[in-house]
Amino acid sequence: MDFAPDEEHALLRGAVAGVVGRFGHGYFVSEARRGGNAGDLWSELAALGFVGVNIPAEYGGGGRGLVELAIVEEECAAGGCPLLMLLVSPAICGSVIARYGTDEQKDRWLPGLASGADKMAFAITEPDAGSNSHRISTTATPYGGGWRLRGAKYYISGVDDAAHMLVVARTGVDERTGRGELSLFVVDTDAAGLSRVQIPVELVATERQYSLWFDDVEVGPDRLVGPVGGALRPLFDGLNPERILSAALLNGIGRYALERAAAYARDRRVWDTPIGAHQGIAHPLAEAAVHVELARLMTDKAAWLYDTRADAAEASNMAKFAAADAAAMALDRAIQTHGGNGMATEFGLSTMWGMARLLRIAPVSREMILNFVAQHTLGLPRSY
Ligand SMILES: Cc1cc2nc3c(=O)[nH]c(=O)nc-3n(C[C@H](O)[C@H](O)[C@H](O)COP(=O)(O)OP(=O)(O)OC[C@H]3O[C@@H](n4cnc5c(N)ncnc54)[C@H](O)[C@@H]3O)c2cc1C
Image (cartoon, rainbow, N blue to C red; front, side):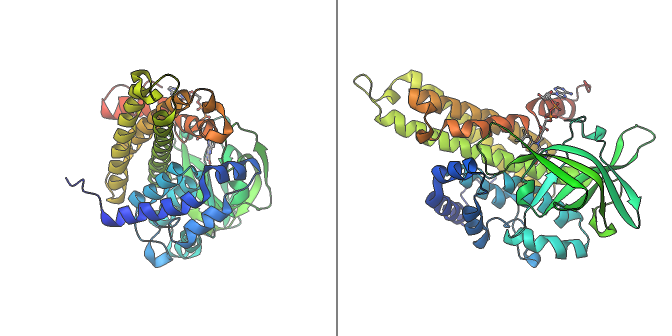
């Protein structure tokens, strides 16, 4: 066991923090409010190889793994710029295509994801299925040598900012269990038959969410990623990275909140001492700092397990759960520490609340994580 800081990781952290520090939370909020995509920040991070750090080197990526991509995401969020698109494009889509794509698919999609010039959205959630992915009803049926997709998805992030998306569709039903057999397809976001409507959400983010309708959207045979009807394995190999990156983003928010709270509590005097001298202020922040650090440790473990191709499901779920609770705790207490200023746009705390709160629900809710841990870690009966 070696917890000594890795020099290369420290350099990566510093370099990302340096770039993000030149933009800051004010930039992020103004981009989100004008409907922008933080394109200048994305381009700078991409030009330095940070966006594609986990994509294999032979496709132009950094040839590193999720440990490094998680560092990039944590530093972005810690600098006030939590980028959901990193969870989706390099983490889910990049990981799935790198592990399950054909050579031709890797040649075609990975260089763009590696350079950051292309972004890929990810679409699994459906109005009638929700957390029960086995029940998704978007179908892909064989047609003219390729496939034809029909159905609806909702809350799909970044579709307006991505040229393609990785879509989960049902290609059959398992006779024995009655569950859908799932497959993965790369679909162009401007494909004929695909329509979208933005869903208004109370979230300060540089990605927008959409309802999507697939009305006989046709794709060629080359768009199927992984085996027909056998997407569960590739899917979980993509969803674990999403959970790890979500945890990293949340850990960054936790650090961001605590740094601001501590600075404010050191300076602000209401009686004769700084408010940080009151244990009513100091202990809640110290407790949150413990939880953020524990979540960071679990996130490192989950990313390491994923990168070493070990089973990362339990650790990824636990890391996301712990990080979501820790970030919400840290941010709420940072807001409390600021008194009325906690609500002011200028202090940049309430503008992070939607993001921290979202990640207790998405990409997998805390209840579904507890279901997983109860069943797989504790061996309890499945309750649903
Ligand atoms: C801003 C935003 C961005 C998103 N981006 C994407 C995206 O890019 N791509 C994508 O595919 N999806 C995306 N999502 C969807 C997100 O992953 C889902 O909202 C999430 O998985 C929960 O599904 P649901 O909303 O249908 O809730 P439901 O499944 O309806 O759940 C509602 C509540 O019931 C609880 N619940 C359900 N089943 C059980 C059970 N068995 N036991 C205990 N509790 C249970 C849940 O935990 C939750 O609290 C996004 C959502 C939001 C809000």
